[in-house]
Length: 357
Image (tube, rainbow, N blue to C red; front, side, top):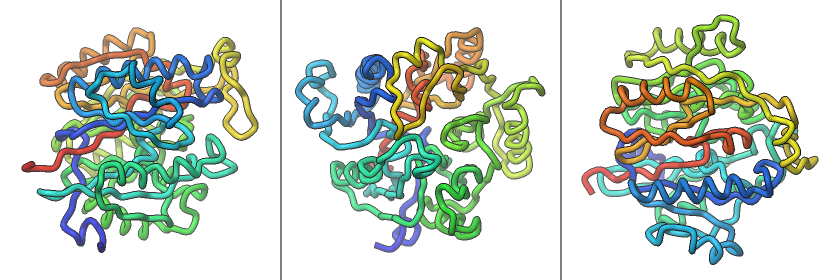
């Protein structure tokens, strides 16, 4: 194999038809509170919802397979796998397709920043997860070991445009020896895109360093969403204004501004429910979180929308009903993934359908 571009493959947009969704069962107690029980209940609930719209690959540690099976819809496929945590978006492969085949692009992973800046250590099982899923699906894979890239760091629109942030892909804690020019060459080669739109940063205080999937999402070939606040005194405003100006200059899509929820923080109660260990980020009272409605997840004919227990929940739900009139809007409390450092989009990963099949 050469590269997806040379082999005649391309990237589909997340808004296009899915074959299914990858979801993973949590066990960590430093990231998931109450011995991970809250997050486990959410993951099971999500899987049982998603199976109504598309296939589900439910990844679980081998010793838990029999225990979990009885809690899941019988149509859900259980995959025995080893992993360090459940961020399927970031550790799964990126998929490329042609008219008869799907392949996987497997990047390297270092826990969002390595030993000094990463969320936890070790991460070797997460780094091997993309290859595992490729083997489960029985598809060929492109393995790129010399680039650190998480799935939440990029968005491909399915029409040869890719969105990303300099604060992640060009960060010295990810790719210290890769120039912007060389990174663009690799992105064009492996995502099969011609246009790359760079934001300087993502959402302020995003633990990942600024994943693009927390500020921007593609609706279709002509529309996109951008996280937004009109409050110039909001600490998040500066980065979002920069992103908005980049889009005005670089993209022709219509921009739908999506209000942000209020800033949120780890509570004292949540701190007590988490096990603090030296090898992972300590989530203590006052730890700043990065909530965003942009971190939604598209399903075939539906949309999983976060809720944050604030008045913006209903406002944004009504906005999304207008943006996605043909999709059922399923709004669910997103506090658990938020405490862990992400959202619904972060813990789920689509497997695209193959066109004409």
